[in-house]
Amino acid sequence: MIHRQMPDQEETFESGRRFAGEALERANARAREMREGMHDVAQRGLDSVSASAAAAQRQLNQYVHATGRYVADQPVKSALFAAAVGAAVAGIVIALRHQRRGPTTFY
Image (tube, rainbow, N blue to C red):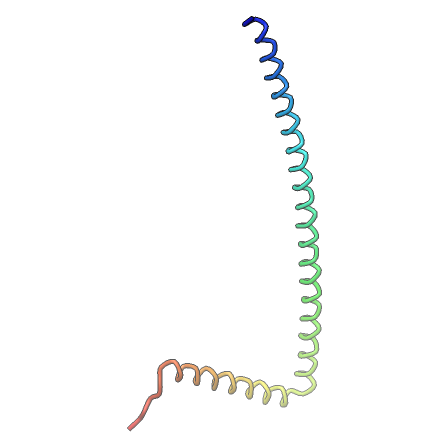
């Protein structure tokens, strides 16, 4: 009787082992598919960022050239504009520093 149960147990064990092996193969295949899909998504994202960066670089170059032409064509106006912007930035910095320190009274 013990001898007869052994083949059944071995058969059950073998069946379980085959089932586990097939499940592992399916899981590995699915993991490969997901990894390849993620690689494609990442590549499309990188391509999109690269294209956006190239477009931004072209736009920046256009602004640089336009600004250079404006300064060359109207140097006095450009200098006055730069001085006005500098004064505005300095005024903002002074106001923010004053606000952070609190009002100062001079007697």
